[in-house]
Length: 255
Image (tube, rainbow, N blue to C red; front, side):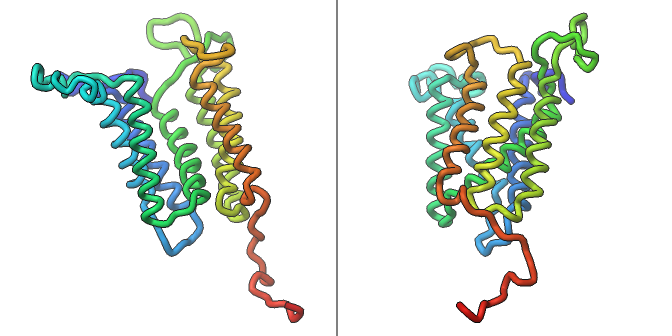
């Protein structure tokens, strides 16, 4: 596990979050490909998700130059040292979403299938990410608490809590995958993931509160769980695949 936030690279400091984030997304896409039932229209989801993430990163990273393009002429080095903004986060998200919408339309991929892929990739990426990056929460006196170098107090290992709950959701979904129709994986895993991560966030430290005493991250978990629960009311949420059986292809004489 990495406890530092940056990796020295010559005169630059490369944030480990970027590297591990890209690795996690690629791993999530690969697992989503294996998770899918055999289909004729096979898609390399790892490439698609990496491209979407890269588009988001580029727009976010250099978004300040969109508001002030003359800064490049005044100081070309701004391309190396400029930092993304909050507006860039939303703009990058819109660009990435537009790219995904274009891709799904071009490949004629249904929204149910894509949501299933997205939630499987996200859960897998969350496991990989939290396995590699340490995140400590509130102070604790429990024996499994972790203490950073130079500190006497112990803190909740939030990253390990997340790995445990996400791994449990992943394994539960893996066992159920053969019985779930398109869209059902998102409903089940999305609801379980949102609720599980919301519970784990109670042990995390939040410096900023957005609304009703909850952080933006906590509201995102609530939003995921609600969105997945609401999606369960769509027709795909009420049917499950029948397990394979010798009678699967049997034709009734009354039909």
